[in-house]
Image (cartoon, rainbow over all chains, first blue to last red; front, side, top):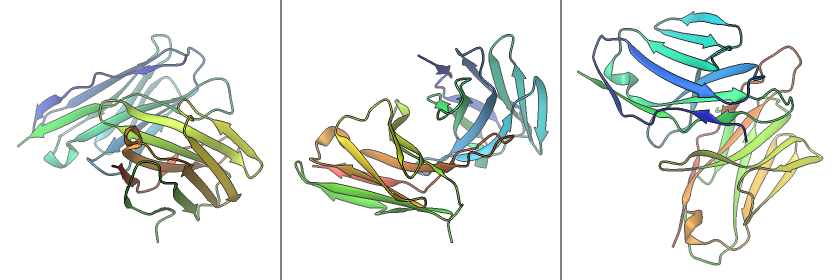
Length: 112
Length: 115
């Protein structure tokens, strides 16, 4: 059973702070990793993906991947109240033609 | 126009009724998926299809069936709806191009209530 684990939260941060969201996965051979944002009652939307160890930056968002530790994180700099949402981590298993495996998500609340 | 559309967006039905949820996409993707989402349980995969002739069960397929009518259309049916099928249902699509990460893109969702 391939698993993706996230702390359900809520994670509360003040406006302007850095929010750090974490995700661990069980399939050591997993190849690509995704972060989605989901507002309440809406569909998940892709923020970014990463497939190489290290950091990948896109605007205020940075994804960090450590395959040895089976750990992926998302940093949100200068957090805004509009960032308040549930963040889903998803992993593509190494078994090739299989769908993404999703974590249950971390709820982030940015306090103005 | 949205790349992935779902109809209906909201549906209230009664126990025992047959319900069909439809998904269409204009992204040209060959892979399509159906998920349901319940509070605290995250996204759970119901069925997926990698091309028109390919249908695969996900982790919670019991009580559901699907039809891939064309590359762009993938329908989910509840043959006899029951209250615990009340949930938010999402369709998603992805490509299968080698050398890409095959990101999944989601439709807007269908909120289904079974009374």
